[in-house]
Structures are given as C-alpha cells and as structure tokens.
Length: 257
Image (cartoon, rainbow, N blue to C red; front, side):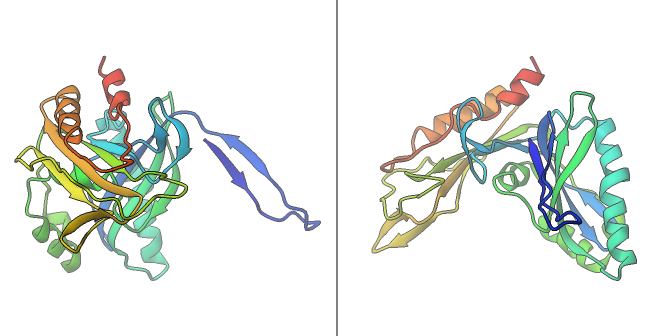
C-alpha cells in the first residue's frame, strides 16, 4: 500500500512522500464506552474487485472472521498500544467517545501492526461475518457501552468461521447499474444468511438499488467449509449483471495451509 503525504512545504510547494507498506490488511473493531473497550471478533476483507486481488479498489467484495493474521499476542498488543491509547487520548481532549471504533491495520511480515485509518463505525462487509459469529445478546452489549459498563461484560463468539461473499451490481464500482430485477435468492438457514444492502421492493419486484447488492454469509467449522457453503448459496442468486469474487477467504486458507 502506498501512503501519500500531501502537506505543503515551506515554499508552498506540495510535498509528496511515498511510503510502501507491505503486508495484510485486517479490521480491528471495538465498542467504546469512553473509558473501556470491548473488542469484537477480528475480520479481514477483500478490497479488489477481481479474484487474486486484481482490478479496481472497492468498498469490499467479501470478508471472513476470525482473521488468522491477528494472533492472540498481536490482539493484546493492538488493544494495549493502539486502541486504548486512542480512547484515552480522546478522553483527555474532552471527548468521551461512546460507539464503535474501527482501526484499519496493516500486518507486516514481522507480525507487527501499523494503523492505516480509524473509522467511527463498524465495517462493511466485515460486520456481516462478525454478527454471524456473535452469540451474546447484542442489545445488552450496546446498553453496557451506553452506561459505561464495558469493563463488566464479555462477548461470546461462535468458534466457527464466518465468511461472506458480496454480490455486486453490473458496472460496480465505477458505474453500478440500478433497476435490475433479482429473480432468485438463496433460502436463509441457520448457518447461512443473505444480508441485503442495495435492494428495494418496487411494484412487487425486488430490484437492485446500489453497487454492493447482497452479502451471502455462512458459518462453517473451517474456512474451507464456510467458503463452500457461502458459494453454494451465492450460486442461487440471480439478477442480470451480478458479479462476485470466487476466492473470498484465500488468505486465511493460505495461512492455515
């Protein structure tokens, strides 16, 4: 990844500094009550449109949870050196931040993490696999965050892997086509859920209204099983121009042999 620093130099000329970061991106999302942080399950998404991480950048073509690249040791270090100092720093500035804090990380070959960005939200499509794995009552966690009690609650997670595949519209990401009729959807089951994003009901028809239309998400005992179940469901989706990647989860499969 190339980072550009476009600050103005003393002469007024624009200074461009290129810094190439090699590694894997991972999403580290927590809930904050202004003092404490509760980490959600780790996840990793796929930004490029095409298989093999090729093609234009997108908002995300699929994701899986957990992210093997975030080891328990790294998880503890990120909480200690990135997340909590950020929350404490905001508090010191008079900002008692309550909500979701999303740190986009680059994990290098040495296992160290660099922070690429922060967002005050959950991620899409990371949220779908994360929520598939959450076994705790989500509303109770939200109430604990509101009340400043996150240090007294724990989130319980399904041990299985969740993997979601985004089905996008024709022309996405540059010029997504709207109005195509979705003629078939997979049947939701306990271990497979189709999350709607760019859809709407118009005159009794389910139609495409945005770039990322659906995220078909499945749970499996392994990454490969979750991947197989998700793609079996994706193959049941039907609308003109539908596009999706066939290799969501390839990094996790590689890391686990």
